[in-house]
Length: 591
Image (cartoon, rainbow, N blue to C red; front, top):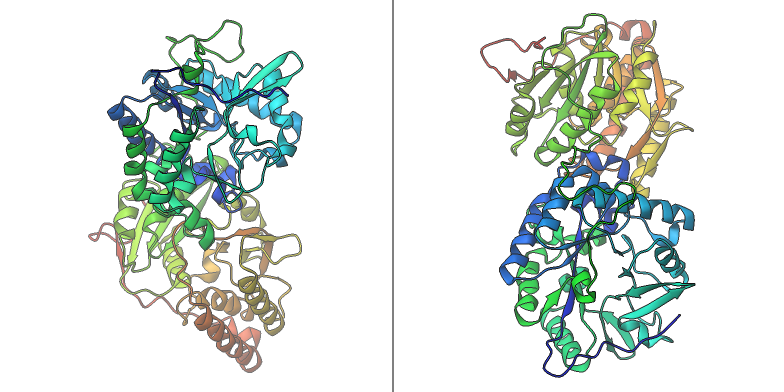
């Protein structure tokens, strides 16, 4: 390791500081890492283009060039956006292919992720990738092996060290630009700038610190740096911080939502304040690095070569279904105040269409008298599709009644129901549908099965749900573990005339309970239940728990007094009126 002193500015020369930008979308950030599986990134409505365009406009207004740290995944999904950044004169660098934490990544896996991202970004931008920033968490002393790998692989610089608290207290020179040496290779480190207060290092250079700390304190800290040091001030922010209209991840814990959303509206003005008062540039321009591509690097394309569209999205099915050899299956989706979830649902179902290609899929969306713009969003997104039917209930009756409405409107014997928020992965239907064999009337997803599981569900809620399921299992004498899941496969002729009397989520348990008392065959499929990510849950916990106790009493009395044979005669229909998306025809599925 070689230490060098802070950069000295010659008399009369204007100090040039470093501006860096994290080009990423709201659902890819570290704050939501524990909640959002990156395998589900494709489901989310993208807003990265809007945030990036606003960032480019802001920089252009101040005549500033910056270094954009981009994920390789983003470069492959949106190559045109990355190229636009490069063509605007900005440097494009990498923060890995995914948002990986260096501390949790083995060295060889880190190297593979690093090289994969470099190839993807260079292919998209048509420029050399010279620098790296860790996608998740600043580097500490135990992570410096990553700098060795960067130097080995020919990177010119890194900007992943952030001094927080007493980190690197014994090496105060790390607060400034310095050189890292590994064998014959060297790497320049551009640490995120921090202020020293009461012996503690406090980052004052952007991002979450700009949004959480008082503005006067931030301005004072930056001004003090400019007076006290000749070394460049290294500032950063993210493109999503320029997008106040980004969708909200309501399923995130309170603290993570504060970390991500607090004071986003003030960021454009605050960044503009510093760009107006101080000189900033990109790392490459500051160091005099050339970003022209060199021949022979795998994955790099000539600057003027037309890039192909890079996407793993599965194309939608043809609008007209002409095949008669595939088994017809209807998927019913109950929706209540799910306006913000519809884009997420639509992206998910596009993949489901491809993964369940062996079936002739039709969809019925039932708006359960929503009070927001769910109906408008459903009709706009699905109303014109030949394989979709959109229904609307005049009075809110809960998911079970909405599901039954969809079942009765379908024209297939096999009908599935899924949650609008996709808290169960709809791709699991490929495993569940074949379980609807002779003698089976319902197949239910089961997170409480010994082979099932839950993710990010609060412990108290899990305790209540498991307790309810145990009581249902005892009262109904059914050897299944979950009675409250909306994610199911039904035999239409067996359930369409079951009468559900209870509103809300109680109707889901009531439906399976009455089917059980009536002698219906029930199977379960182990499944993973994930907490809701988009939108808010409409379930009222205390009311639901008390309702389950009342339903259990009713089912126990029904089983004792009428017996299984009599219970099988239960029938009836949904009393709430239904209006089709086209009110001049009966609610039938267009085929």
